[in-house]
Image (cartoon, rainbow, N blue to C red; front, side, top):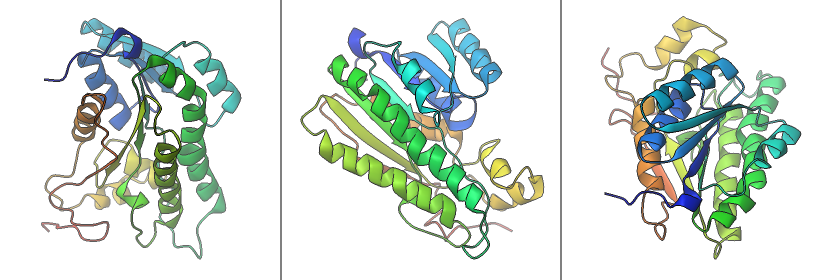
Length: 257
């Protein structure tokens, strides 16, 4: 069993914590002994989650934040002297159109949230992570950041950008007391990811997982994040690819139809 986090490194910030993987990660990190700070645009969601975590005897606080708003991110970061963990989870996909007809506004929004949002929060909190003496940056990318598929170019491009951000940051801060961990999930079934991608079209969202016996869940990914974060401080999980057994690649999925 991993040791409890030190006093200097026990604050964990989770972006996009209002639902799905972010909310599940906040619950599991809190159970592992971290004081979790939940950030997301939906204030009511993160406040309810903070109440749930605190009622369970753990420690959580909610802070409404849009990661694409750099001034707001800097103001948020100014509240901390040190933090131990940053989980860059905020992101998402919009649309599944081919390159020829994809909406540039969707591409821009995905890049702003997945890449610039991650950059904003990481830049603002990196000095606080260094100051802890034992910091960890987690970047939740995707298998889309490692390979492409038809109809996914906008999201794939954004996740490739996030993957490169993680890889480059690790090179640039080697020697500093901060790890950079990238977790790249494949097919994860959550309440909102596919529904958001298809503009609220439940039929299209359901079809993504049709016939797949056991896609990953938010808890599966959160468990993996928590495991990586709680390794001894000298152990860095550079890149961990996580897929359900039914998925061999981005384009090869076993469906029981």
